[in-house]
Length: 422
Image (cartoon, rainbow, N blue to C red; front, top):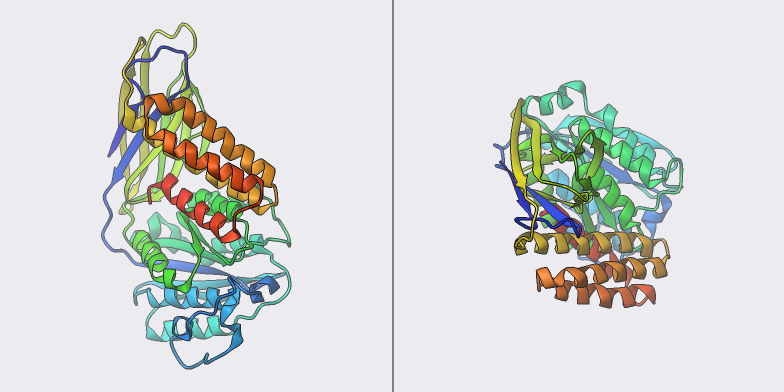
């Protein structure tokens, strides 16, 4: 279930090194899902999404929409996503819907998704119309209320909880800071409610939605075309219904080492002698990579990692330890490659957020700095040279603004998935 890999078999105390924790949790049996859609109905959702007009067959399950110029708006893309997600639910699943513009409200209480429930849910979606401002925080903050105590307790006695935010990501009313959103999403995740985010259009802030998804233990999706909806819905429902481990946390004990922030950007907090890292609900294989430095005079010791979480309503735990030896050592290239991949992905995510805020110079600098770091590491893993060259090229494009908004958001999505191995 858990394994520790080190970047070398011995350490000479001169450089930053890397620790990789591999976590493997087999998918669980299909369990009922309680889902909530958090739907952006602000005025900006009435704007064009990508300047393209998708086929009407993607936008409706019936004759409600025929030939209308509104097919290309963000709102219609969001409605199409909502209909696809509703259609993917089974009769034992439940759904609630929240809308937010200047104010946020629960428009559709938690309801079983039998045929009657699905029809009612789709009628609710059809009535959404863009208006006013974007109180995204207000919408997300209502999630705790729509998931009952029965739903949350022990995953709802086998029931998985998943919230999906559908938005163009331009929060401009109420609380808007990244840190506040991260704290809110993290509190939901700790209660067993995973939060994913779907960004629509080319004007949303990918970093904000990534922060929400990361802290909420969910996924980030950039909705480029309606043809990508099937894969998004498949991934969301598969993960929600076949969770292997819930509320998974890693406790890394490495008392004498200086541990850095994990390269995956999982939420972490310091504890005596180490770090605690929250992975949330997981299935399959995940990893966490931590940079570390050993102090002068270090004589050797051990690093220990403990896993805790829940499976099928019961506590689960596992532990592993690895001895730290001092001296001239051999490089484990696979660990260095993964560290380099995450350094690249982290830089691309940070740069995308800065670019979205108009800080082209800062975005280019982040990419250039990470490119230089990968060049330094390349003698230990030659594959990193190609990553360094890619970041260097991107640094030039970002710093001069010569990259499209769609490319920036697509890059963020790919980088997010690389960091989570999804």
